[in-house]
Amino acid sequence: MSFIIPCYPPDYKTLSVGISNLKCSYPFLRTGILGRSLCLRKIYSLRLGRAENPVLITAGFHAQEWITSLVLLRFIERVCQAAQKRNTLCGIDVGGALNRREVIFIPCINPDGTEIALKGSCTAGKYRNFVEKISNKDLSHWNANARGVDINHNFNAGWQISRKLENEAGITGPSPRRFGGAAPESEPETQALTNLCRNRCPRTAIALHSQGEEIFYEYGKYTPERGLHLAKIFSASSGYTLVQNAGIYSHAGFKDWFIEEFHSPAFTFELGKGKNPLPLSEFDSIYSKVEEMLILACIM
Ligand SMILES: [Zn+2]
Image 1 (cartoon, protein in one colour):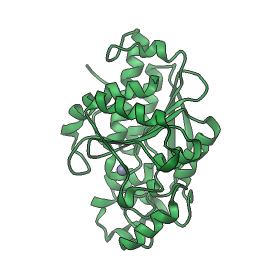
Image 2: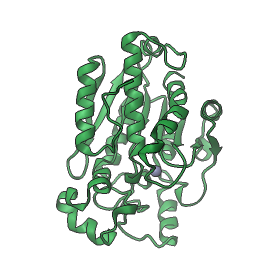
Image 3: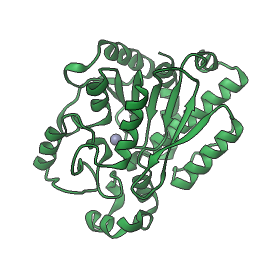
């Protein structure tokens, strides 16, 4: 089977052209711009179906985890193919289901960081020197946005606790990873996502990260019961392990904020297993393990 989205590291041009080509082939796919990154790159949204309280699936928070963007784009394309041909996907009539459900996809919430990781500091515009300084010109661990803020430590849920844990880990300012910013929601990429959620109140939110083949599903006392039920279904579908928050990654993430703010289910899916960035040679096996889980997330 051939695909519009190439199995290639999704730099910004590949992402933009791919989304435009998807839209041409599947006119029912509604594309939009959720916001702009620090370097003014577009944060794309793609929408299928129409209904109140959509399901939201996001990827590309961490620059070294660009394979998550590729997995989400492949999934969008497979859903579009099935809907257009009225085929089932994993035995499910996804086209029919989307008559009564909207799904919003954000393939890359951190386009600057992804570009820096894939193509170097020269892509960081006015932040170029800053990126080189705080990374010591070693971008192999770069996960942040263009000014060294880790988007997934920048949400307003236990942010002060997260800051304390960062300090204890020796991270006291902008850094290639793990620095939560000057204040919660200080970054335009974070704001793009929180604005969308406040406007649309998704029924469920999913953030794709890598790696570990794990599912995070809880945050404090507001974790809804439906979150645990869904997590068990997702785990049964994918074989991924359910895990609870622990340590420096336990606060200020998108999933944490979403649960605390809306008391609705949110999940982090840690795709694949190995060392980030996971190689493209792993893509097919990663994708095949999670496709049914992503379909279930859309329809449940
Ligand atoms: Zn991540």
